[in-house]
Image 1 (cartoon, each protein chain N blue to C red):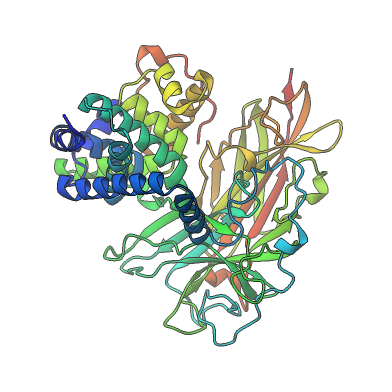
Image 2 (cartoon, rainbow over the protein chains, first blue to last red; image 1 turned 30 degrees about the vertical axis):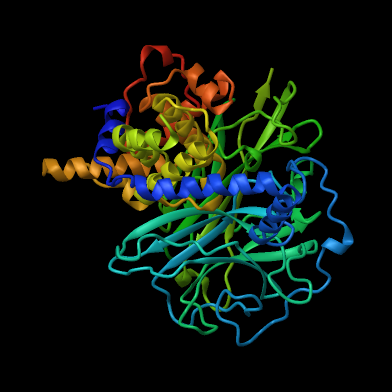
Length: 374
Length: 178
C-alpha cells in the first residue's frame, strides 16, 4: 500500500512534542534587540566597531574573510602571511582530540564505532571544510560526550572542527546509527601560527570520542585522507583520472550506466567485520580529453549523503543519480560522450583494523557503458 | 496593534502551527522551538510597521525557511539511519502510529535541507511548485527536481509514496533503489 505523504506529514506534525511558545520571554528578547538596534543607530561608528569585533570572535581564524570559491574554479591560495609556517607541536599529555594530541587508537575494542568522510566541496570560503560523521552506538550503550572531528599531520592533531558533534541522545541508550554534517576549519588549532590556514599537503581526518581526561580515546574513526591544495580541499575537477586513488581490494564494486540519469552500483565489502559505507562519489570523465568534468561532490548537496551499514560479503545495491552538469559552474555539459567512475568510501570497524591506526577503504570502479549528452 | 499585541496574538493563535512547521523542517522539538523563537524575534524586532498578525506570520515563516536552509545545516544535522528500516509488522495500532510518525520524521532527516524544505512546503504547506520556487528563490525546474529527489529519498525508507496531486504529475523519476 502506498503512503499518503500529505496525511503522513500532517500526522507527524500533529503529534510532534513541540511544547508551546512563551510570549513573555520572547517579548524580553525582542525588546532587547530593538534597544540594541536603536543604540547602534545612535552610536554610528561605535556600532560598526562592535560588529567587527563580534565577527572576529565568532568566526575562528580566517573563516569567512575570503570570497566564495567554486570547487572547479581556480584556487590560488592565500597570501603567505595568512598561512601557517609552523604547525602545532605534539603534546604527549594532550587529551584525546585536543590540539597537539598524538593520534592513537583505543587500547581495547570500543563500544562505539565512528566514521568520517569528506562531504561536498566548500562553497563559501577557502577554509571551511564540509565533513560527514557517522556514529554507531550499540544496544544498551549511552553516548554522552560530543564527538570531535580533527585533522592530523604526521599523527598529530593540527586542526579541529568548530565544535563537537553533540548527540542529543544522552539519556537514550542504543542502538543508534546516526550521521551528522558539519564544517571544520582548515586552520591551525594552536601553536605560534594559531588560526592561520593549513599549508598545502597531505593530512588525515579523524572522528574522536574523547576518553576520561587522558590521551586514550574512547573511540576513533578510521582516518580519511585529505589533500589540501591552494589552502582548500584538493579539487579533482579538470584533472585527469590519475588523481583517482587506487581501489582497496576489500571493496568490490560493479557499476553500470542504466541510462543518462542513473547507474546501478553493487558493492560487496570483503572485510572480516561490519563496516559503514560513508560516501559515494560519482565522476564524469570527458571521453575525448580524459579530464574529469563532472563530480557529485560539487552538487549542492541536493541528494544528501548516502550511507549504509555493510555486512561482510553481503551485496549492497544502490542506484546513484547521474547529473550531466559541469563541476566548474554547474552548467549543462556540452554534447559528447562521458565515462562514469564511482568512488565509494568505507569505514571499517575497529575489529577490522588490526594493529595501529586504520584508514578508510576506498572502492573505485569505472562503470560499464557511457553517458551521452546529445 | 503594537508589536507586543502581534506577538501575543501570533503565539496564542498560530504558535502551535509554527512549531509544527519548524518541527517538520528540523525534525527536533528543541530545534523547532529555537527556529520559531529566533524568527519571531528577528521579524518583530525590525518590522516596526507590521501590524497584521497574518502578514507577520508570513515573514516569520519565510525567516524560518531561510534560517533553516542557510544556518541550521551549518551547525549540525543528525539523522537516524538504522531505525529508518524499522519493521512494519507491528500489531499494536498505537505503537504502529508512533513508529510510523517517527519513521516519517527520520526519513525527512536523510534529505538535504533544500530538498526537505521543498517536500515540507509541497506536502505539508500545500504550496504549488511556483510558490515553492518563489519562497526558495529557485527555478520551477529545480523545485521539481528537488521534489522528485525528495520523494525518492523518502521512498527508500518508507516504501512507495502515493503520487502527488495532479499539478505535480509531471515529476520525473531520477533514481530508485533496489
